[in-house]
Image 1: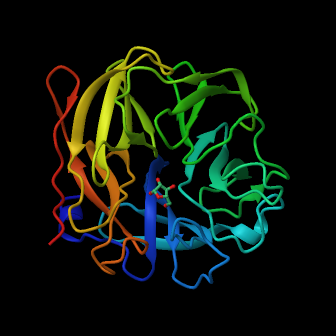
Image 2 (image 1 turned 30 degrees about the horizontal axis):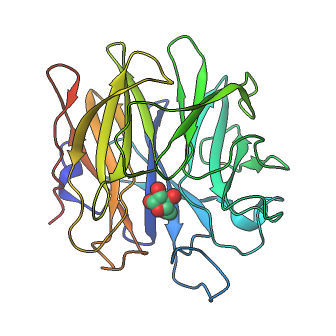
Length: 294
Ligand code: FUB
């Protein structure tokens, strides 16, 4: 794992974004969005052109296997055909099934993005999507988390307010109230990722208080908040890449932060995933991560 820092970006054959990292068995996986530049003026949105998701895995942090496309926009019955709006996904395993959550433009026009679920018996697919999107979840950037008592949660949204709810036992619907998460700073937020460490919930998210997005976090003692805002742990990019999107995972005794930047393309909409080690400080703080990209 020592040389993960020397190879950013670590996927160079395609453009990748929005990394969701998970450990399944003895492998470290990263599931990413896929940026392409083939959209016409009726396709994509906000300048992004994103047709599908890819899975990558490694056992040493250096040699990555590209498992190819996990799910394509035109595999999903409720997604608008060729809309190229497959934004940031997340994935979780429960009882031997892998659940892929993803935001996409619905063909019925019921929102900018709805969030769907697809399942597989393997983390790399093939994934079978549900026929329709999740009811009651309207927004972008699903983040999923299972607490130590087995209860799973889904978080989503982009804007001033991020939301969360309990997932039902079948992992395909929500149960109980949708909670507007409290204690977060003002300003644009999206792409949340929850971890629990030493009994503390760390709710982490890209935050644009001015300019582009920095990675920030808040802590609490309940998965649905309220939280206490703690500040940023990765500075915003200053080269014109407006977004950042991250996840963090402990693998072989080290915490690793996955995020994205546009080093290869220098184009805000053609991004590449990167990784660096992450450490924690006293009083449940996250030490600032500085990219080792050369
Ligand atoms: O990749 C498309 C969107 O940009 C994601 O949904 C956001 O998190 C941001 O990375």
